[in-house]
Image (cartoon, rainbow, N blue to C red):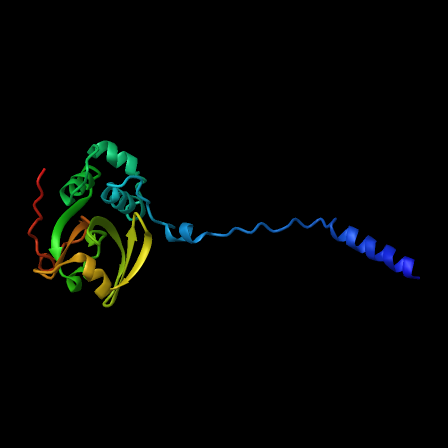
Length: 191
């Protein structure tokens, strides 16, 4: 009887490997992939502004414009300014204005925005994903989606003297921009 049991056991083991059900494919998303899901990643050290603009044109305006296309149009530079990004946006038919703005007023802007941050001595451009009274979510072309408390974000964004931050605000032509929301002094850059 012991021999029959071993034969049946071997037959069961053999037949279990002959199932006609295909194994399920499992797809795992790495932390790095999930961090950059829906974010245009910058390709060069100095191209964070171009990547942020590419992100807005692609994900907010449904125009698949790559960083490489923007780089070709703008030309290679050691750094880019809001003025450069404003002119590039205009070349794609988008209206954008560089402003100094307070956090509370920024919450009232209903269009995309690019922010100028200074983190640990490094100047950097990021785009807005979500903002409320106490939190902000940004799309950082170098780090992916980042969540900050208002205080953390303001530490990198605000000018300590004016208590305002720099932003490139995109306006929808069909909306009337409320001029009282922003300080319309345009940031001057050397070209």
